[in-house]
Length: 179
Image (cartoon, rainbow, N blue to C red):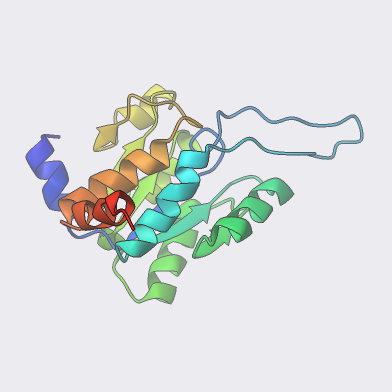
């Protein structure tokens, strides 16, 4: 997709929905011997991206196929608008999210890295994948990041959307202001 087409699609985005493992994380899972998941590793720049998105009027939604207490805790701490873990059918969940927020699926951007994300991508208005996504996903998205999961992919997508909508420079100016 050309940059011009990407910008045109991004102008209409009201929600960015994202997978977790392989997108917000590097895809590795640490499990203790008692089968508990003691922690997760997330990129701090993705955390700030959520604040930037909110300042630009864009909601962030997490839809993860894996049930994870670490993910749920991180989403709560960051103020993610909606977070779902243990989702087996992401297309159905994305339709539910659209209905709950009163928007069309075409107004949702989706970030995913693996086959479980393809059904949701089929109905989203704009699709992104990290560099480490499986080839079948990369072939079907509008934009493949040069960043791998856990390296700030959400941040990149938020900046693309906010720039397309003309709000990024105003948000950046807030950080450049000297009191």
